[in-house]
Image (cartoon, rainbow over all chains, first blue to last red; front, side):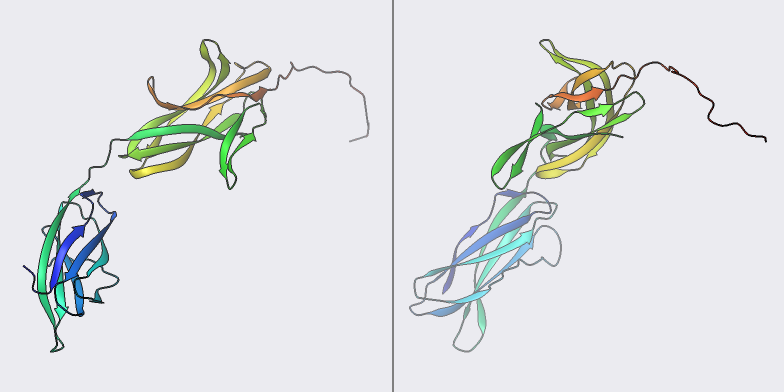
Length: 128
Length: 138
């Protein structure tokens, strides 16, 4: 259970193709009675070490009491199922960031569909 | 008149296609645009010249070649061509054209373009007259 920066959810697709960009959103709620600085972090677990990070263009924000902030991030889907680890931190009065909460979500590897053709048209014909 | 529908800023426009004149010995390059999704695959691109009729397409000339279609994670439009050798199997006149991907059981077939190939009939060799135009000591 989080003390101040409570991760209330991770939004991510249930599956993604290898090499595709996976967009995620981590929602963090301020449980404190005043505005505090909240920071997001993330890593990917799929059998490699160290765990690769998740890119968050905006990693921190001041969040009002009881408010929830959404942090958008993304990563490139590897060649196997991946577990997203999202972390939250709060900024304390001593000037340090403290780890507070963690949530995980799994993104499965989508299979490449069988080859399929949708249409064909003759667009030109020329004497050679 | 045959033509193709092309996207434009005003929606889809109809672009009429003129007949191309051919004679025996020529090749007709038929360029096709197709859409694909999924795994990479090698398939036959096939095109034929003939006549569209009530009973289907009566093929006279055709050609095919194997094309390698790469893996596509989403629908992609691609182009490929096949060359049909023009022979005397065509007599003078207008002919229709269609293309498909696949063999006996096609994966996808194009609309038929009507009257887009015109075979030029060339007569047998014939001489009309002969005249001496110059004579000189050599």
